[in-house]
Amino acid sequence: MIFVEAPKSIEEMKKIGKSINAPLGANMIEGGATPISSTATLHKMGYQLILYPLSILYANTFATIQTWKELKVSRFQ
Image 1 (cartoon, helix red, strand yellow):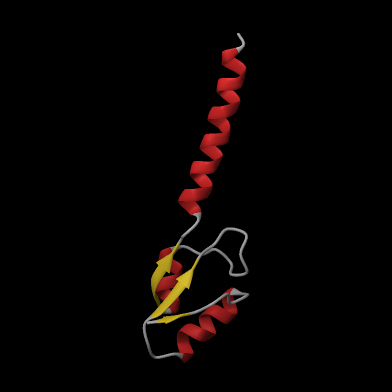
Image 2 (tube, rainbow, N blue to C red):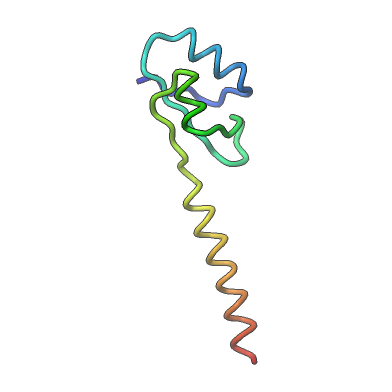
């Protein structure tokens, strides 16, 4: 497994996928250097392992902030 670190474009990702004859891993981080792509698209480019390591953390953080806001408002009504 070769973990491809931070390609900057879809074209670069495609080139890597075609150039390397080994299982490839891609890391999809919101706001990161690599453009976010779907697992289906990445599989077509030659990537076998696709990670979304911060997606759940970001979703949980957003939900927590929204809950705090609701509690602050409802607590004083």
